[in-house]
View (cartoon, rainbow, N blue to C red):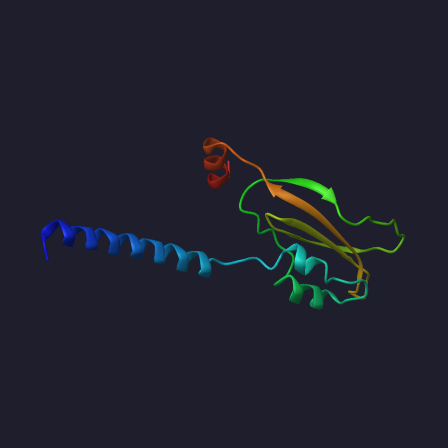
Length: 130
């Protein structure tokens, strides 16, 4: 085999290896359970434990940067009963669940959000916590 042909095979092998590594990384990249598909399954009367099982754990913020609020997908109603509020937030959706004193879902408000582009300086400041 000639030297140029060998170099071509080596280059193609490296390119194929890089592409395979990228595909494997994309497939294994962690995905959040805080999604629209999971949020629509939350029903009034569920326990907080059931909601946590659907959304992958306790209330938390899994955004990867600044987000802006889209539109409200479900309305809220006023009540005289003191409610406990729990929020799950991802780059796609904000889920706010209010539970009654017994720990049952009284309301679930889903708000669509989207990532906001930020400058490299703003991103650096966010990473440093400034």
